[in-house]
Length: 220
Ligand code: CMP
Image (cartoon, rainbow, N blue to C red):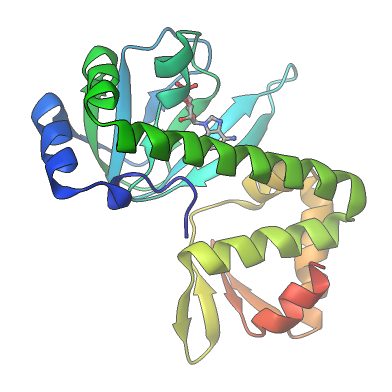
């Protein structure tokens, strides 16, 4: 299950309340929903499509923090603490969203304590995830980190077919590199090694995991 999945856990009446306080908005592929450092006025619920959360380094590089899919709540951090946006968010695919003003969102949480509790759990899940990634960065080599991210993508977004588990996420090798904290060259090398061992095959912007157990073993 996606730790960022928020909408799917809400009761029908809660969802109705949210939709009443927001408006639907479509974003084309590549559109920027939030820019890091901006003051926040809205939160955004993803109804369909996927978005990337990223931060820019001092050298202009991009660090990919997360990929968020349908049901995700985005923008809750600055809505809750009033600080500027912690990261930027851009559409990896055309997105359908519900945009809710911060004031309505905070009122919604007061009216629905169970929903507020879910946000607490979501943030705890993210903290665990980020602790785990910090340990991974110190423990695993690039091959292990690439394998870990592919296992995560396969479990969250994979479609099982005759060719194993197909992951179609519009991520470039640069983005995969930024996500695993590695250089593009070492990611290319890691993918080549996994291909050579028959664990994956790669197509343009998609990866087929032929043997998920082998991939899991490599990620351990
Ligand atoms: P906010 O800080 O308002 O704007 C950027 C949003 O990106 C943030 O709220 C969260 O919704 C999301 N975000 C930031 N960091 C992460 C992360 N590590 N994992 C998932 N989502 C994140």
